Image 1 (cartoon, rainbow, N blue to C red):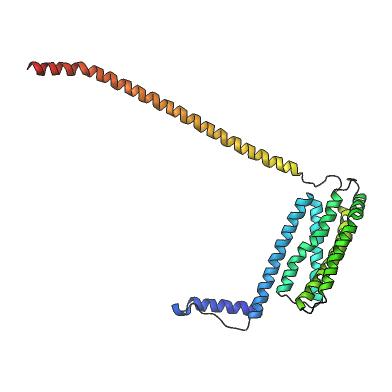
Image 2: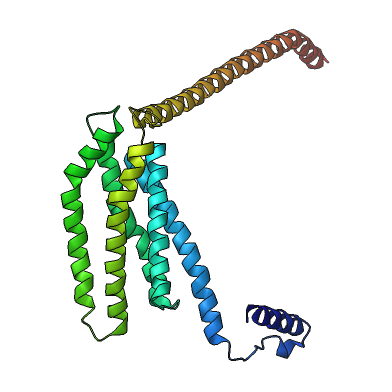
Length: 275
């Protein structure tokens, strides 16, 4: 179907480009509207999913300021999205407007629990012991995260009682995302941290150092700009002084020349008067 759709678009485009002026605004009528919609939804879903993953990566990086934790969190989020997408396919859902929107929302709902556990791991007091940091994060945050997942799961279960198909599917989506996100963030992500989590301050990004570097670079740029302005001002003053001295010297030469010519003019006037 895709080859047929692409071939027909290319053929019609070539024919319309060579058509007379009155026929260049023509179009091709077919029964491929559904395929065109599905193709647009597929392209839009992939692009929105990629953009959502990039935004989630930036948010986790800014929140944790640790490269290893961010990488493990992104691995967890990608696993959650893969499992939820597989469950949607197993339930027989086809790509439509609602499914495209839910897949985009899935990234935002998946990053929440993982980001909480990541921050709890980094704020643990035992910096050089992975196991105790994981225990600290799980004991302090498991209760709150479990209750948050339960309340959202119950909201999705309430939507399942509706007679509208869109509400039913959105409720099922919430239940799947909350269950998968809770399981992967609690067991998979914390398991990765207990095995490959950073110890101490390894792979950490110092925000104050980055801020100081940015401020220092701005100060250097401002200082270089002010130095250039001072040099240009000094050069302009020196040029003005030279021009003033030159003009004064020219004025003195002209006055001396006029003083030398003045007696000769008086003598000529006296001779003309005598004559």
